[in-house]
Image 1: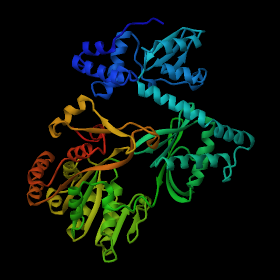
Image 2 (image 1 turned 135 degrees about the horizontal axis):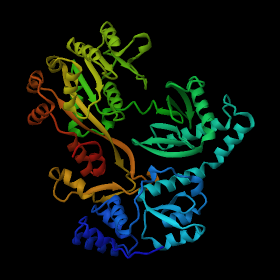
Image 3 (image 1 turned 90 degrees about the vertical axis):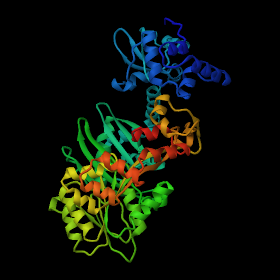
Image 4 (image 1 turned 180 degrees about the vertical axis):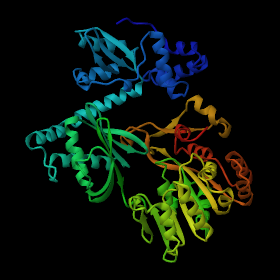
Length: 556
């Protein structure tokens, strides 16, 4: 291996990514750590550069091609030929082999001693190096660990399949034990969904924790059919039908707790993608105080939902917690003294003192049809799971104008956009002005783990986006990663919101067909609207979330 004398700090200064003062500061911090940290780590920690910026500069300087590991098809059998310890020391992953070379991706091409030790193991052919992102290499090592840890149960399932085609109707079968293990692991991780996804060579099992997917199991493809068939039997689906999507439900007791699972299958190139949403009935019985609303937003929202009539819209993308907010609001105002009706698709959770209705498009029972029937049921409060068309929107507006409080959801990026969206759907501006009480736009962001949170410095490009809204010398916090949070640095999620309340002036502007920017500006001047970014930054400065999380879901 040809060694090149590359001084990383000087290279980054030369390229204008850092200043000489920043380099000197980083070198002094490295010295304070007794050189236990690499210079690159310190520069990233101080927010001067990112992993990718360092990797691209090293790639150009060393003449090593940069590669996206996830853009190539990895052969885990090839990776298994080499000692894991040697690979980890070299921070390297073998990506392929041909007649001429062993192709290896590394995140640290300056680690010459470890790479030479790995090269001595691969004595049959010369090594051709590629440069990869540090995070990607670490994720591959995590996947290798997962594969090794699941070998035993995978072998048991394979043996059972080869012996008698697996006992699909037996709760004692190895496949059923595997399903139980997958579900139990997801529940321990506090996951919201489980995804089972086949590809050309294997089956990946991922679970969504705090809004992001994490791979927890990897199995050989031979296990997939048995696994998919048994899950479909649990959900009362047709196991012979693999050409179209199917939906089902099932219930399972896990560690003395009963959980409901909403099951969805859809055909893909290599088989059916299976998603199980975990529904814990206890989790939905939230109070408004549990949502994480700031005091001012909480007081405003509590005041709004106690209005006698009008429409309250909750907006945001899929997975932003809209249903949870709706249920928390209904929990707050439901009582024996009022009648609450909901129409949903599907009904995910059961609420006491609430009459819940399931949409059934097959028989022509849509959201709009349900709403029309509700008005003959003498309700006080109506909740519409989602407004999808003008017919449903118009019915909701008419219900609010005839003395009912209506809750519903829309998919928009911010609160003022909900008004434009209603106009686009076909509702007259004067009807929006007369019926709309408020729009709550929300996102869920990951919270710092309380066990490992520490001060950190965000990258300068992030600070530039929000500097005008920050106090002088702000302090930021972020989870470092510990066993309590599975080394992610995050634990749980919190809501950030913006609430647009409608007063007489804003109502008049809506009637005059004002656009969303005019409405937002007027509402801010009137003190009836504060953008979501400000709520997020308040939680950042309180140490609850890192700055990256806010800018991931809002515009800086």
